[in-house]
Amino acid sequence: MTDINRRSVVKGGVPVRGSTTGQPIMVLFDLLSRRWAMGILWNLASEPRTFRDLQARCGLASPSVLNTRLKELREVGLIKNGEGGYELTATGRELFAHLEPLGDWAMEWVPTL
Image (tube, rainbow, N blue to C red; front, side):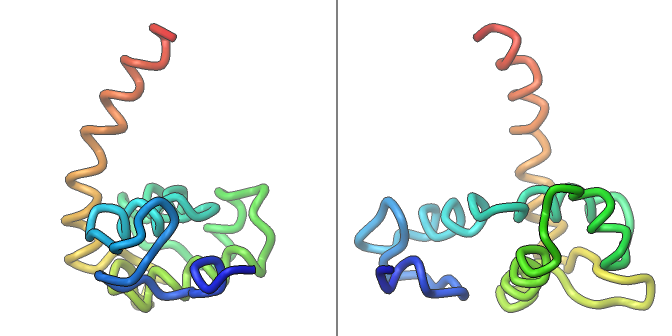
């Protein structure tokens, strides 16, 4: 296992999958490409959710993977523990505002494949 695969927290300027220089966009893509990261963000976009609710919505995610991903997303400031469960931070909401149009674009693109 390489150092890139073992690192749980992403940092700019540090090598990630696909980038030896750790360019910010590649750091973001590395984080978002981890199992269930996007699913968690998408499920938290509308409202806070408890661990059990997220687990039900991410049905194929094991509890350990879900816990790991939640920890990583908290450590980089995209989600937090709120009164109603896990929720997006202001930074997480800003990121989602950029991702949502890509989701819309993908919905139109996939049928053309």
